[in-house]
Length: 48
Image 1 (tube, helix red, strand yellow):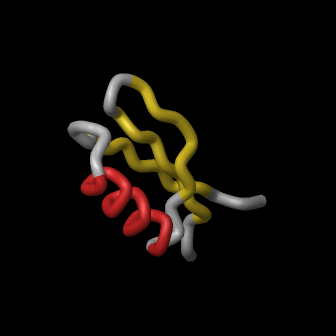
Image 2 (cartoon, one colour):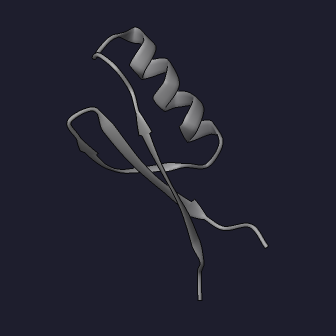
């Protein structure tokens, strides 16, 4: 069974800064699950 950890981050605006931040999370293994009103929800497989 896979275990996941979750993260919720608020990112202001829709600029190159947002793209850079999202790419950084992707490099760390976070998968974008949902975006609601500037809140970005991520998950990744938990390392044990």
